[in-house]
Image (cartoon, rainbow, N blue to C red; front, side, top):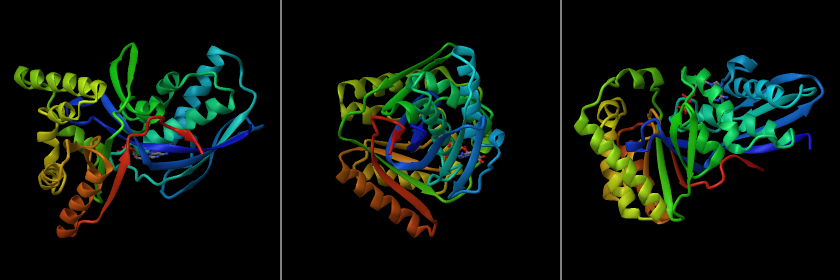
Amino acid sequence: MTEIKLFCPATIANLSCGFDVLGLCLDNAGDEMIVRKVTQKGIRITKITGADLPLETEKNVSGVAAVAMLEAYERDFEPITVGFEIEIYKHIKAGSGIGSSAASSAGAVFGINELLGRPYSRKDLVQFAMQGEKLASGNAHADNVAPALLGGFTLVRSYSPLDIIRIDSPEELFATVVHPQIELKTSDARSVLKQTVSLKSAIMQWGNVGGLIAGLYTKDYDLIGRSLHDEIVEPLRSVLIPGFDLIKQTALENGALGSGISGSGPSIFALSRGKETADKIAKAMSEVYENMNLPYEIHVSKINPDGVRIL
Ligand code: ADP
C-alpha cells in the first residue's frame, strides 16, 4: 500500500463541565486527506483545497505532527528511508471551534502510521498529533486530537504522564453543532478566563464531570443532561458569541439534554437523544441565526465511534 484516503473527523472539545479534558468525535463533519508514500525523504504538503492554509511543512499542523512522528519512529525503531506527501481537502473552517487543526494533525499521523505498517497504536499517535496543536494554539493539548484519533468520548486524565481514557458513547446520542460565521480568536477566548476558581464552583464542576462520565457509562441520558453544566468557563466566554443565550435556551426548549460552547467557540453544541430531536434542535437554532441575519453552518451528527477512518 503506497497511498490512502482518509476521513478526518471534526470534534467537540470541553463539553461544558469538561473544560480542557473532555472531547467527542463527530461522524459526518470532517476533512478528507490523502497520504502517499514516496521515495524522496521528508514530509511535503502538495495540495490544500477548501482553505487558505500554509503548504510549508513547518507551518501546517499536519506537517508538524508528521515530523514529530517520524522523529519518534527513528528513535523507537529504525531510520526512515522513504518520505510522505499529504493532500488536504478542508471542509472544517479553521477557528470554528470544532477541531479543524486537530483533524489535520490526527489524519497525518494516522495515515503515515498505516503506510509504515502500523507501528503505533491509535493512542500512541495522540502525542504526535498534539505537536500539531502546539503549532495552532501554542499549547500541545489533546482534547480534540484524542477524540479525532480514538473516536467516541475521550477524557484526558493527565498530561504528565499522558493518560487518555476512551469512553463509548450511548448509541442514541446525537450532537447538533451550529457555527456562527464570526471570527473568534482562540487567544481572545483564552484571555477572558480567570486563573483561579472558587471552591464552590470547583465542587460543582467536578460533581458534573463525574456525573457526565457515569452517565456515559451507564447510558443514563437524564444524568448526562443533568451534568452538562459549566460553572467556570461558559459564563465568561459566552458573551463573546452572538446569540449564545438564545441558542442554548432554544436547544433546551427543543429537547436538548444540554448545550454549551464547542471548544473555544464560536460554535455551539447541543447533545440529544435520537436524531429526530437533534434535527429539531438544528431547525430551531437555524431560525435564531436567520432572525439575527447572521450567516451560520450547522451539523447534525451521531457520535463517531471510530475516529479517523480509511475511505
Ligand atoms: P479550531 O478552533 O476549529 O479547532 P484551531 O484553532 O485548532 O481551529 O486551528 C486553527 C489554526 O491552525 C489557524 O491559525 C490555522 O491557520 C492553523 N493551521 C495550520 N495548519 C492547519 C490545518 N492543516 N488545518 C487547520 N488549521 C491549520
